[in-house]
Every structure is written in C-alpha cells, then in structure tokens.
Image (cartoon, rainbow, N blue to C red; front, top):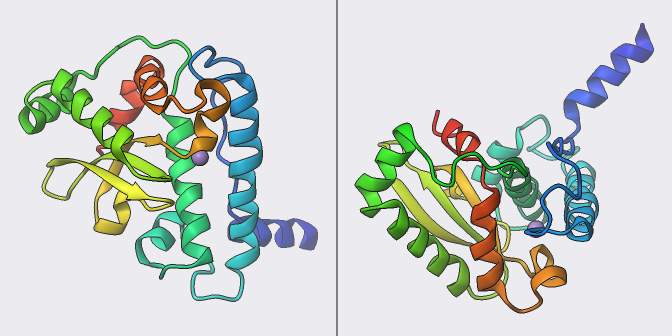
Length: 206
Ligand code: MN
C-alpha cells in the first residue's frame, strides 16, 4: 500500500515521454527510422530527463509543461519544458497513413478566412519554416478570438508563451532533418505535408 502510494506521488510529479503513435520506421521515407530513433528516443528523452531533474524544489513543481512554458523565465527549465511541449505536439501530429492531404471542417474554414486558401497558407508556412535563422520552430496557432497565426519561434519557444494555442509545428533544428536531407531544409519541409494527420491538428482547436 505505502509502496503504491509512493509510486503514485512520484508519478504525479514526473514528466513523461509522450507515446509514439506509430512504429519508428512508419514515417519512411519522409522521416527515416534512424532520425526518429535519435530525435524521439534520444533528444526528447534528454529534454524529459532534464526537466525532471531541474523542476523539483522550484516554484514550478507540480505545474504542467504548458504552464511552465507560458510562465518560466529564460533558462534551463524553460528550455527543456519548451522542447518537451514542442516535441510532444510534433510527434503526435504525424500519421503513416494520411487520409486527408488538407484539413476540412472548421480548421479549413479558418485557414481560408485568415490566409485566403490552403495553398497560400502552405506557402506562408513553408516560407516561415525555411527563413527561420538558426534553430527553432514554425507554428500554426489560434488566439483566444479564434484567429490563426503563423509564427517563427526561436530555439525552444512555443506560441503558448504569447497566450495562443499551438495547432501544428515544424521542427527546423538540424537534428530533425540533417541525416535524411543534409542541408536541404526546404525539401524536408515540403515532404512533411505528406504525413500530417489533419484530424489531430484540428482537434487541438478545442
Ligand atoms: Mn527536435
């Protein structure tokens, strides 16, 4: 009983690896098995481990990753929480069996309203992703009035820091594509559209 109780307390304080909802080789050839094994299995695991080491004893103990990213000052806790949140959304938005090459329903309407067309949204998102200098993320997010935004976030940042809800994120750190595409970031970005699960992206609007 006391062992279980201790275990539950530890579990409630511990940041966890998100589930990978497909096999490590399932996204080939868009993302190779080797890249998934390193990116999910090593990079993300390190961010999770670092967060678990850094948070105990600070004001962030017991807070969700989203709360930490929204409020933490620049520094190690923000860096690692940002990367845990970013990669959880990133690995969760892909599917090896894409059914829809673009969104439908409410998300499709919002994209048409705010970007003119899906094609134009994709063009603007590609431009943001390829022009981001150094390491970082491009995000599609929604503000609290329902308007969509494309932002470039440096290093580990996320739109929750600006009070928005992230829907879709492309990781443009070199570790995300260098083994498969070397310096051809634009080619990698173009291929990523083939593995987006638009139903998952749309579900994040709620
Ligand atoms: Mn990454």
